[in-house]
Length: 167
Image 1 (cartoon, rainbow, N blue to C red):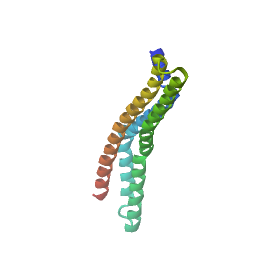
Image 2: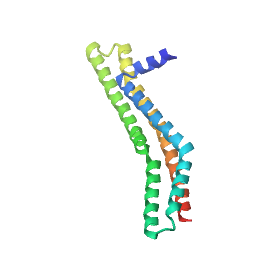
Image 3: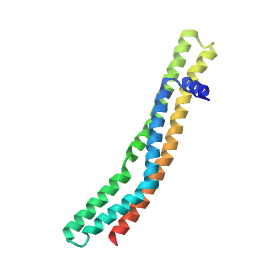
Image 4: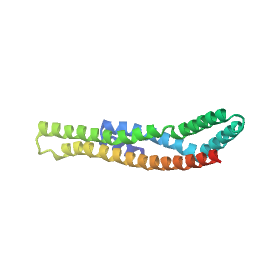
């Protein structure tokens, strides 16, 4: 298993290691956001709602400012790492394109050195050109699914939170 993974990484050239690093970071960010929305978001909203209710009837101005602060804190907590996830999603296909360019340069170098008759040497360069593109797109698509899911979860829970603040 490990041998086949290493062989796959070598077939894609050095750019594939960069995509692997981005994929690991993206996976960590996705797990963090999953944990937050699954276990921490409801408790955060409940605590902030309780905090706002303490100031709700004392002074109208203080109540309004506290409400705005509570909304801001919850919105910031819900938005944490989502823009970084989006950045990783955008970067992955660019790394794949970089792998394509470096792989094609390898093919052209092989053609210049040995001519067009050495198909085996050209195949390695073509593999270096296609594997990173595929890997970058796959990682990006997986990240895009989770980003969309987290955006929907955040909007749904924030709408519920805003409704409770207005009651």
